[in-house]
Amino acid sequence: MSVPFDLTAQGYWLPLSAIFGVTMSVVAMTDPPWSVIMVAAFILFVVVQGIHYRQLRREVQGKPATAGPGVGILGAVFGGAAVLIHDTSIALWAGPVLGLVTFVGTYLYLRRFGAGAP
Image 1: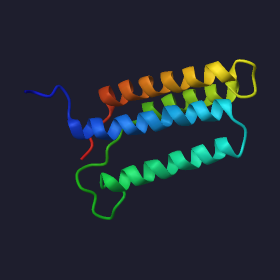
Image 2: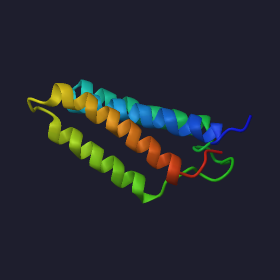
Image 3: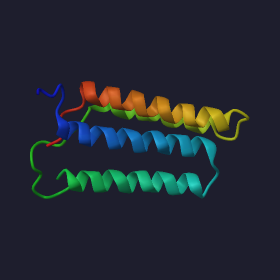
Image 4: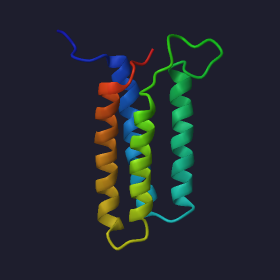
C-alpha cells in the first residue's frame, strides 16, 4: 500500500500545527497567567519536538526542517487575530474557531511548503 505523504513529516507537522491552534485558542479566550502559560508550553513543545527530530543538536541529522518566512507571517496573522479577539464579547466562540482555523491553515501550509522532517 502506498502512502501519499511522508509519515515522518506528518508526525512532525501535525503536532506542531495542533498545539499552535490550541495556543491561539487559549490566548484568545483567557487572561494571564493562563495565556502566558500556554505560550510558554508551546515554546517548550517546539523545543522538545526539535530535539526529538534532531533539529536542535550540534550534529543535526539531515537538514533543518523549515517552511521559509511564510510560516512566520502565517503565525503572526493568527497571533494578531488572537490578540484582537481577546477581551471581546465574541471571544468564547471565536477563540475555538480561530484555533481550528489556525490548526488547519498551518498544517496545510506546512504540508505544502514545509521541508520534510529528517
